[in-house]
Length: 447
Image (cartoon, rainbow, N blue to C red; front, side, top):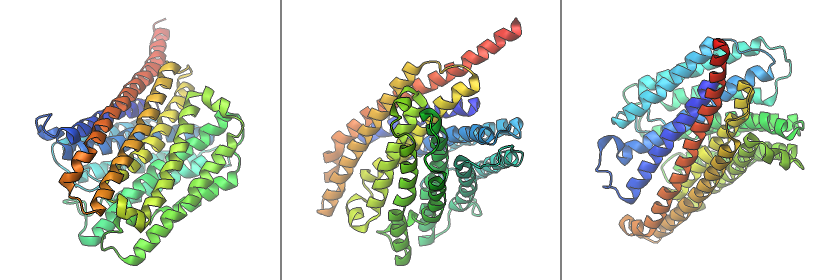
């Protein structure tokens, strides 16, 4: 787990720096000299994939390796497989960064990694599932707590989502053709968030909040309703990104209906968690991990209210192809899943090292940098998106809209400094927390 957590915090630094470079190029496109491997079209792909798979994915997969054995009251089936999956996962992300920087890409949203990397990702997911499933088989705890359901659901659905979404049977392009490819692309683009990050983040929240609040989960029944309803509703809503395209009308209707219906599993999860923490917020604020997770649940609410709203055709006339959607993506990946990821790291790390976190003060500074940065991102990008959408609806051309949003792009880049600062603090805090325990272990061996 320590390797997963240190890797995740390190990848966050890479991802936020990549995002900052991209933000600078949106303000002054020629400032960095058009160096090929950091031009916007490449660095943006590095930014999204590193933050999604390198930071959030690595951190939550590491958490799964802690949650499953702990909740099943047994040891991990194979530490060797666990270490192998960590190294293979990091290798896949690292090769992905290099190849994307060199311009080798499938050029599809969130599925830019080339075919050999896709195969590597699938192998890692299969190995992790095998390791955790064998752990499940050896359990001494008969009750499968809801976090277990979410972890295994995430691994199974992510494997098949990634397989089909990257069209791995077409190694040359990673895609199919025509309108079916657009539908497939957004089936993947939406489900990689809904079936990878969301279940693993919710699994962590379901584990952490009752412990921090020193209270049992409000309702195990509600938790399972949330689990099965997200599986029922989420898989087919990606087409709401294609309402303006010639996708089949019946599929658009199903996508919009499912998007609105997602209020059910989301509110089921949040009501369950918030009733668990009722009258116990003091416990949450006194625990740095719980504090992060609580903030993540609030971002989950905002993300999942905005999603159904922007799936409505009348609203999408204004928001489609604008920075409103960019704000929504940042809110989901970083605000919801990302903040819960770091909360989970800070909660679990002391439990696996046997010592307190290196610095709660640094973690608290990081918390506020993330929170202020994300609030600013959401506000600035949403405002810029509304300006773009309103101008286009009134017949304005792109070149006349760009000067109107230039200030917002400057603010966006400035806010990115807060997120980079938080990422650097995070990796330092995690590294020191791990190195202290390692250093003490070496001292004991010498003595």
